[in-house]
Structures are given as structure tokens and as C-alpha cells.
Image (cartoon, rainbow, N blue to C red):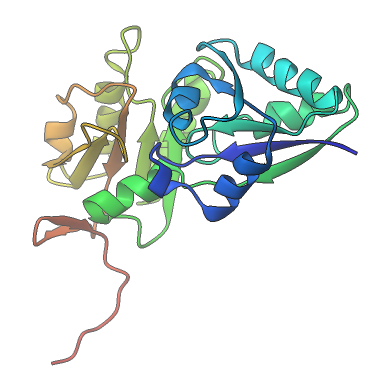
Length: 243
């Protein structure tokens, strides 16, 4: 059976990849992915053949990978974070039947996990991950999800919080959350997780409303119990510590 592996490469650095992801890429004849992700991998897998496409060509990229696999080559289709979380696993699986290719999904470390580690432990309890990109999801649906997570006092992780065309989306999101939470709610951001220029910052929900994020920023909004402990963002699990 012809095979294609959809591989989550984590935040970007080699050390952030799972051992399964590394072994899968090492076993592949060809690596296919978004240009930026291929560039991150080339220094670590210099003997591999790479095929990349730019942003907004996801379907073309999937078909390219499946065509190569149908030719009998072992393919690793790479995605940042986890391949099944805002990644390419879904479209690959949906298209695979046209090519007679077996699909393997190799998990990776998503930004909610790697960013949480940078901040401390903000996701110790229930949380929701929501993308603010309305390219494929209507804003009305995104707002319904934000409303549910906010009213349910879930910690919230925001992917794709802002772009040139969506400069006010994060501010609008904060306004929605502020209907249910205090302006002093602890929040945090991490930029360029696991890559050069990594940066983290803690702030209140009121301050987050005026923060200028970009597409390389992951935003963490705490729940009503989240606090700062020794410079770390922490959502308590609820244990009782007796002295």
C-alpha cells in the first residue's frame, strides 16, 4: 500500500519534535510542506528531497503530496504544531481516496502546549483553543465559540489572533470575554514559540485588549482562578497544600 505520513513538527526547532516525527521524516523519500516549515527542516535533513508551496495553497500542497505518494515514494507531509490541530491531516484524509494512498497521522506539540510551558502552567484545568481566523470559519461561529468558552470560565487559547486584515479581532475578542470576566484576569502571550526571537509577556485582560499581536503570537486568557506565581502564569488545579 502506498503511504503518506502527515507529520506535526511542533513549534519549529528540532528539539521540539517528537521522536516519532523525526523517525518518520528520516524514513521518507520526499518532504512536502509550507515553505517556512520546509526551510526549518532542511538543515536537519539535508539529504531529503523537498517540495514546498506558499501560504494559501494548502489544497495544491495536499494534492502534490498525494501525487508523489501515488508514484510509490514515501512521503512526509509536514505541518507546524500538530497535524490534526489546524493542520493538514483533515484535507489529506479527505482527498486520499482519489489516489489510493494509505494515510498515517504523526502527532506533534501544538502551540497551546508549547506556549503554555513557556508561560508556566496556565492550562492546568479545562480550556478551549479557538482560532480567530475567519478565512475558513464564519465570524458568527467564532463568536459563538468565544461566548461559550467565556461564559463557562474556561481558560482560552487564541490562535491566529491578528493580521493586517484582522487588526481589531483580538480587541473585539477581549470585549466579548470582558462581559464575563474581570479586567484584571491574568493573560499571557508568547511570540515565535520555540524559534529564534521567542518572547513571552504577562498582562491583564484589560491590557490585552490594547496589545498588538501578530500571526506568530499565541494568546492565553486565564479563568477566574488564574494567577501569577513567581513570574509564571498558573491556573491552580485545586489541590489543598497543608503545612
